Length: 211
Ligand code: AMP
Image (cartoon, rainbow, N blue to C red; front, side, top):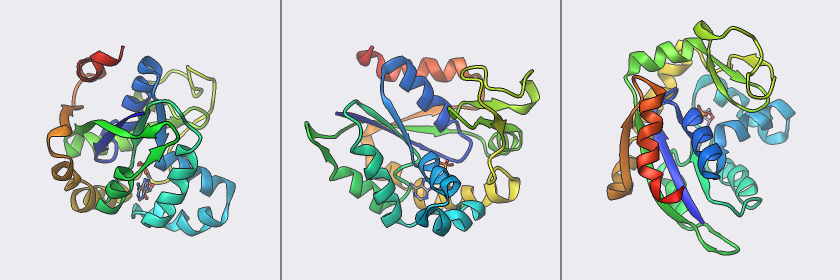
């Protein structure tokens, strides 16, 4: 099983790029942020515990992440793209020791999505997400309040405020960005400051052997 990891600051485009790879290359998209928000929405025991952390923009503990992630991981046999995990060194080590029933999980690429902080803040303040399929929209350019892909409702995430963004950004710099060193040669950086077409082209170059 091949595994692509995305390392990126908040609002750098992890979700959008994951969906692109999922649709075009048949990878299963696993977003720990989505899994955690689902726990909150369902008001589970985990959901109740993590709600304040998500609202503040702090990281959820590694044990809960392991539990929530592995539950989803065990359901899949296809190649996977990881959006939002690992965020700490412990989580990276946990992924290194993963295996599925058909053999080991091979981390083939680590994509570092780079973005200017000001561009990311602007995105956060204008971001709408489809509540059903997770597609991402920009408030300033939509013509309808429904998702064009599945008809779901569009809404802002609770943690998409400038204040929470700044907290999430600092956490990224301190805890997650150092993982780029951990992954060394596997890391390829793409810049997401301009057009999505350029980003998709860079992704295609990285994955061209998988088409
Ligand atoms: P995201 O959707 O990736 O932006 O994640 C939203 C929030 O979920 C983050 O700000 C964290 O509070 C939490 N979260 C998501 N993934 C992780 C993770 N791997 N480790 C710890 N916290 C996480």
